[in-house]
Image (cartoon, rainbow, N blue to C red; front, side, top):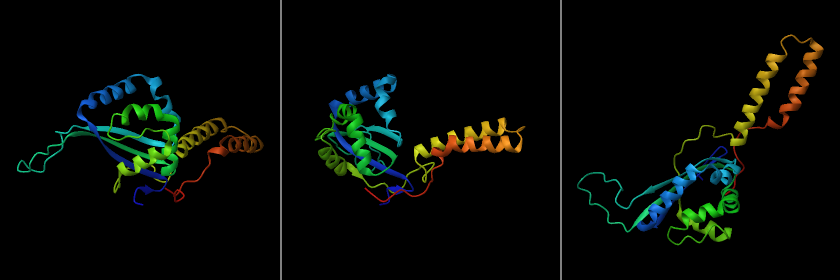
Length: 198
């Protein structure tokens, strides 16, 4: 499973979509980026490193040389790229539970999309559309997004402790240090490889 590195999993899909539907999908993405409340569901999914949608028009596919014949395609294509923590099943389950309306608005305009609910048909569809990811970038492969947030909270608490403990007696320092450890104990997780799963 080359899609997994550390705790980060990469998923990519490509979906055909009728040319007449492309402008509707573009409009949805424009509104989604413009109207912040529409993004609330996505913000809830804190295990996502990133998710990106790209539309490739039927006449925009690159050619290696001018001698290569232009392709005569009937569909535009919607590409989806994402890195996330957890297993593939957890990711699709969460997308189905939290973002089904948004996914139906986008993928619903693609060919043979069964809908984000029920999740079993959705998973079968994604499995057919997904392609293997050989290379991808992740800034923190052995840390989840929550690990990174916890590290920031720990650093902030430690910096505050350093500033406030300069003039403490040894006894006061010990009490303050113990209080610091109690404050950050939930943020002192471990990084490393994720459990194997799909």
